[in-house]
Amino acid sequence: MHRLLAAVGFVAVALLLMMVQMVPAPAQPENLPGPDLVLALTLAWVGRSPQTLPVILIACVLLAADLLLQYPPGLGAALGVIAAEVLRRHILRFRTRYFPAEWSRAALLIFAVGLGHWIILGLTFSPQPVLGDIVLRAMFTAAAYPVFVGALSLCGLRAEAPA
Image (cartoon, rainbow, N blue to C red; front, side, top):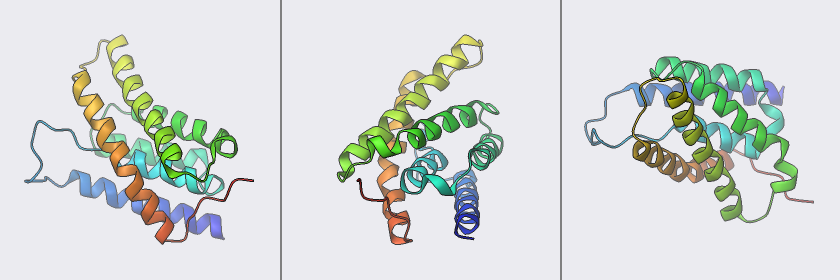
């Protein structure tokens, strides 16, 4: 039952974040990319409770984000699933008591997703965003990661202590 509630909560929060990102923001400058809030939420959730999110659920949510936010369909979802699974597979080995180490691992995965996105779009001769925009988006996403970790901790979803 706990896993079902966690999955429903994840989908609900992810959909809410997608809706927030779809609303035009008058205060945001047009030349600055926004963070990938759904990716930050996914990595924070998998880092806190890897057993509650099946890979198919992550794939469906990230694909919905690609479609609703008008990104190349499936590319962000595939790269996000790979990042989440890398985090999940190595969670016991990487888990530490120090948040900066966890944050740096998440930031590395976020940058890898952004760079992979840029490289794959280039290899397929699709229109590419400027590499600087990809880096800025990854920086803003990495900066949003601690917010999601804090919110999940307040909701009772805490990482287990290392053994």
